[in-house]
Image 1 (cartoon, helix red, strand yellow):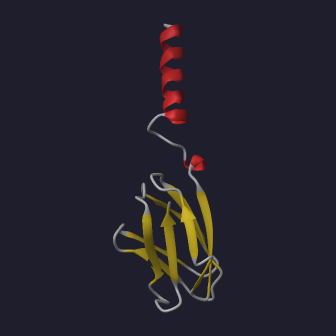
Image 2 (cartoon, rainbow, N blue to C red):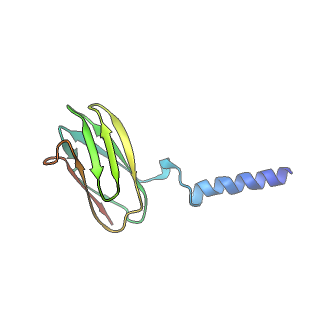
Image 3 (spheres, rainbow, N blue to C red):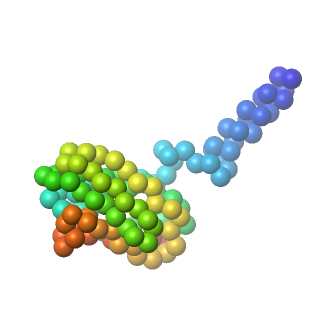
Length: 113
């Protein structure tokens, strides 16, 4: 019985390490600061074919609505808030995100290579 329990545990932990399930800490992570409706940086390159984590930091002074209609991603952050979104596996190409509250200055371009 102990061998069976050990096998099941090792199989399960192996799935986390190298199988389909991936811990969030293993995702490529990119930090984006938003200050008065301006993304810093305004353009980032991410690996294609992988999920990626975008950490959003809203330095204010007002709220931020981070959005991409194609991916159905929408996240609202108050001034001073910090959060994240995980993007799906991206095909090579360019993806535009906006701050709906500041559509003229609030643009982020994500380039998957």
